Length: 285
Ligand code: PDD
Image (cartoon, rainbow, N blue to C red; front, side, top):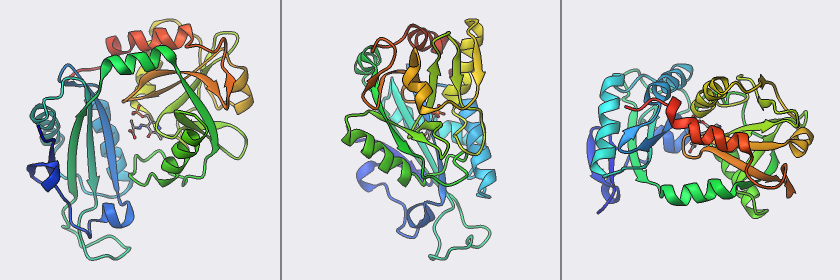
C-alpha cells in the first residue's frame, strides 16, 4: 500500500505529493512542524501539540492555515488513510509559495500544509527502551529561539550525525557554560544520586516538549522530588539515571553519556516507571 500524504487540500500518494520549488519551507526553512504520537489509531496529546503549533505560528507571524478543528480532521484522516495503529503523524506548515525574496510575501499568500503519518514497530521500540540508548554530547550551535518548533533543523541534523558517528543514538546539546540544553530531538533529564528528577527550565533555549510537560505531571503523581534547573555535563556523568523525552520515544532511558556508563549502566527504575505510567496521564483523541 503506498503511503498517503495530505498536501494543501488533497490526499495523494507520496510519489505524487509535492509542494512548489519556491515554497518558503524549502527555500528558507520558513515553517514550523509538530510530531504527534499515534496509539491504537488515536492521537496522543493532540490538544497540547495544537496549542504549541498555534504559538509557533504566532511567534513567526505565519497565518493559521485553517481552524484547529479542520486541522484535527486532516490529521485523523491521514492516520486513517494510512491505516496507522501505532506510529506518528507529522504536520508541517510553511509560509507558503512565493517568488524567492527574504521579507514576508504578500498578505494573502496561503500557508502550505503537509501531513504525513507512519507506523512504528512498538515491539522494537520497547526493546530499545529495555536496553536504553547511548548519548554523546555536542556543542549547541543553534539560534536563540529554539522554543519555536521551526523546521530549520540543520544544527540538530549535524549533532545527531556527530553522535551517530561516535556510536550514540541521541546528541545532548551543551551550552557555553557546559550545561545540557536538550537533545537534538528530545528533552534531557537526569536523576541525581539522592533521587531528584532534574530538567532544564523552559526558556528560549529549549523546546517546550509536550512529553516533558506530561512527564512532570506523572512525576508529581508519583511523588518524586523534581527540580527545574540546568545541569552540567559533569553532573550528568555522575547521575544515577538519565533519560530523554519526545513524542516518538516517550521516555527513553540513557545508559551512557560520552561512553561513560550512567548509574549501573542499564535503564534506571525512575525512567522505567515514568515510561510505564506515561499513557495513563496522556490525552487520547
Ligand atoms: N522532536 N527538543 C527538540 C529539539 C525536539 O525536536 C523535540 C521533539 C523535543 C521533544 O518534544 P515533544 O515531547 O513535544 O515531542 C525536544 C520531534 C519528536 C521530532 O523532531 O521528531
